[in-house]
Length: 359
Image 1 (cartoon, rainbow, N blue to C red):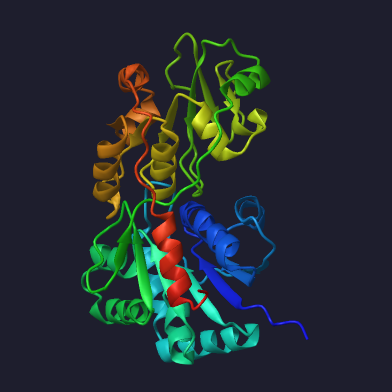
Image 2 (image 1 turned 60 degrees about the vertical axis):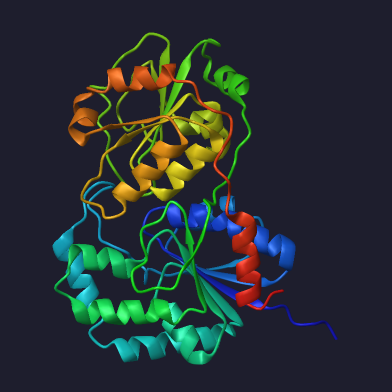
C-alpha cells in the first residue's frame, strides 16, 4: 500500500507579487530536499504567476482572505477602506477562526506555512497542526503603524501570529514587536545573465544601456511621456498602454523570465519592496527607487539596500515629471561589487523542515 504524502497548505498573501516571489525559492527548496509532498496553495496571486514560480505540481485555491492593506496603487494606501475591511474581518473573529478550521479539515491538511496570513495560523494551531509563518513583515505591525487606536484588532492579529510554531523573519525585515521571530538572510531567486540575447531580441546595439521599470504586482499607471530621453538608453516596462516611444519596449517583447531579465539589464527603476530589492541585490543590478515614506516598511528596506547595492532615491513627483535623469546617470556609472549578500535559504529550509515535521 502506497504511503500517503504529507499535505502542506501554503497560504500566500495576494498583496502584490512580493510575498509569492519570496516564498517560491523557499518552498521549491523544501520540496526538493524534503519532499515530495502534496501542496495546496491558498492565494489571490494569479495562477499563471504561481505556475511560473513554483517548480512542482500544486492545487490552487483562490483566496482573498489575506488582503494586507487596500491600495489605490503601488504607492498609496486607502486608509479608510483598509480600516473598514479589518473591522468587518474581525467583527466575529471566533466564527471566522472556526470557518478556517473547517476548511483545513476539509483539505485534510497535515501542516501549514503562511506568508503572512494570520487567520490560517490561528486555525491551524487550534487544530494542533504544525504551522509556520515566514515573511519580512506582519500585518499586525502594519495595522498598528497606521491605526494605533485599534488595540482589539491588533491583539487578535498578534495572538494569531504568536500561535505559529515558528516565525521566520527574512531580511530585510521590519522589527517584529511581540513576536519571538528567528532572522535569516534574504531569500530570492537568482537569474542568468543573458544580455547579448536580450539586446539581439530587442534589435538594439551592444552598447545600449537598459533600464527595467516596474512597480511590482499592484496596478500602477506610469505616464511615460515625460521620462528622460537619453541617447543609448532604452526602457523596458510591463505595459506600454497607448504610449509609443522608440526608446521604450514592453517587457513581453524580451521573451525571458523576470530574474534573467533583471540580471541582464543595467538598472532597475522600482518602488521599495522586498521582492524587487532582494532580487536586485542578489542579481547585482543597481536600483533607482521611488520613495514611499508613508509605508511602515520603507526605511528598513532602503537602509538594507544601501548597505548591499548602489542605489538612489527619487520622489514620485520626479517620476511623474521625468526629472530623474541625473540620478539615473549617476547610478549607471557606479561600479557594482560582484559579491551578493549571504542568502538565508539553507537555514530557513532547515527550520521549516524541523517545525513542520518534515525532517
